[in-house]
Image (cartoon, rainbow, N blue to C red; front, side, top):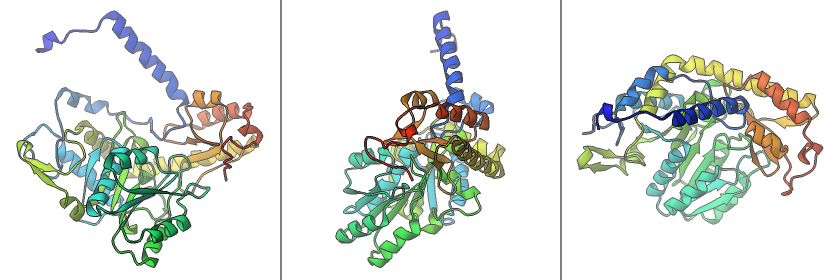
Length: 392
């Protein structure tokens, strides 16, 4: 099909797109409940969308499919490797379609290294992990969470002790979905040491906090230097992108054990998908070469300050709200469904949160808190949720 045969939209179809744009623009003004930054501008990259490029295969190996952005993808991986303190010249990674793919990769690696292993994950873990475990058909046990969202170390210790004849595959959260909790990696490693377990795998889901903790003065232990074997981080969250994306990093020696040569594309099969988005690496590369690490550091500081501002505004209307150290997730009692819908909040049982991403302003916080002040939901009056959950 030639360019002259591509055709044009009808007036009715153009109107539909205009209406969609207007609706999204309006909804963007009350988008404070999910961890996706709205501060980005990738317009200088739009001309690359005319090419059928595809990052098929391993980004560190040449491919017969040469319309790719592997060079830029490698640079992005190297930046993330430095920020996560990955072992120099001994780590590997690729740009994913988002956190779920990165977590699947980590669990997949753990399963391939320890086929008889059992995956341990907390009840505050993202819902997609249970789906991944079903897809990979891996033995797994859910561990209780502490009230603040961190994995319950005593339950983990006792459960691993009972099943200490098989290698544990630990799925650790660095910033849980609802409460922003960071699992205690030193505590997890102490359990493994105390039980004399040498064969294990530790994957870290750092979807949001993985781009916060490198830029704060006193981060919780969370990266390769703290014992992780693989880490998944989202790109569309703190960095910001119109397309879900992320990076997964792992120790190269573990990845080498699962690599397969694919003749007809002339490269190694080391990733989850075959065809991969070649535009996302360009966006992440562009962000690091424009905003830069210092820009991200300033953005993280502003986001944390906005979170504290939100907590103070809640206190001013007599409503309790809290956050974990180094977290932009502000947790409070679940409000009425009208507020949930208007402000696009994520809720679970008796808890709700706002997430002070780079686009969230103090003016938005003021408008939201004003709505909360008028809320007459049961939670607003200090009653328990139907599930009986209380929020610390």
